[in-house]
Image (cartoon, rainbow, N blue to C red):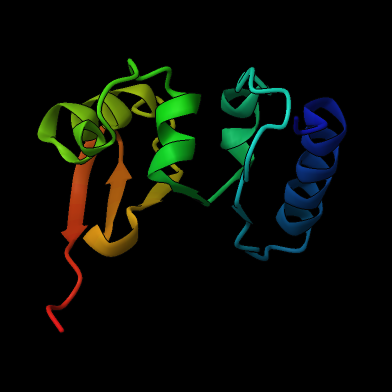
Length: 121
């Protein structure tokens, strides 16, 4: 669902050029939905090149293979820890998970670093 090999090559090229120029480019990725419903597009293989991964709670559930259940289960502490643990080996990548009306959560190095609730109306 992501042409990972091609994308990895392009991202590596960007990082190589910026290194030679002593520059820093911020790269973010929004994975979107996997039309094949397999959710195994090699995302972990390209996170080394990504600064920010921005995904919805639904995408996070599918990518991390969190067990299906009630939709509200994705908002509990177990789900947040599951997502944090899944991405823990990518210390240079910040994971931003949006949760619709429930706000957003930021992860880094296997930890929840911020849990932003939406403001009451």
